[in-house]
Amino acid sequence: MSHSEIRRAVVLGGGGVTGIAWEIGVLAGLSESGISLADHADALYGTSAGAFAATLIASGADIAQRYRDQFEQADFEIAVAMPDDVAQRYNEAVQANYGNAIPLAKAYGHIARTSDPVSPDVRLRVVRHRLGVDRWPNDRLRLTAIDADTGKLVVLDSSSGLSLVEAANASGAVPGIWPMVSAGGRNWIDGGMISAANAELGTGFDRVLVIAPVPESTAGFDSVDAAAAKLRETAEVTVITPNRAAVEAIGPNVFDPSRRGACAHAGLIQAREASAEILARWVA
Image (cartoon, rainbow, N blue to C red):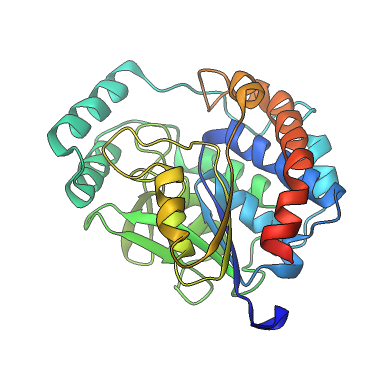
């Protein structure tokens, strides 16, 4: 197979505002090492936090500047934490639907409908600022969201009938934290509620790079490593997940914007260390 015939995908997972910062750090470290994901990827899949990182790649954003931004105060970001009552409802939903994706996703949809998160207008301002663009940059960008009514994971792209802002907003609509998104005649919640990374979306590609702030599943579904193992039956797969320093930087609350700088720095260091492997296994 010639170099031009090799099909490459990047899969970027969810993990809150700290996950975005860590992923931006990873992207900055790769760029520093001469690796431009945009130049090689045939598809960019983004889930929740990863939806924003994937958009930065696809739109040709200045990653070095976005990295520096993580060390500045972000007045547009909202500091939140998972409310105790919502966490309890999550636990009950998982216990009742452990390992059953569709029923569990529907249960999360019910939580989204019956919670009182921040206002949609406030959330939309955050989404717009994070994206930096309001139009789909190309058809390689694909963002995930879950249909709150059917429980099915949907991959949204430029042909899906949703604007980029709507799709990114839907992809990160964590039930009970951010408002459910109604767009395109459907109701949407966060695409990472069953799998934070959705690494299986790399199926069908020859080389897959998975960048996942949250590597584990707590509801009986594949971890990132387990999903990657399945992908390796037909593809070359490289996985980057937070190391010990990154986990410490992320801390206990992935919605805490005050940790952005530390998370970005941790991601940068990890990417520098992983760059040779990515050059050999994903780019070459």
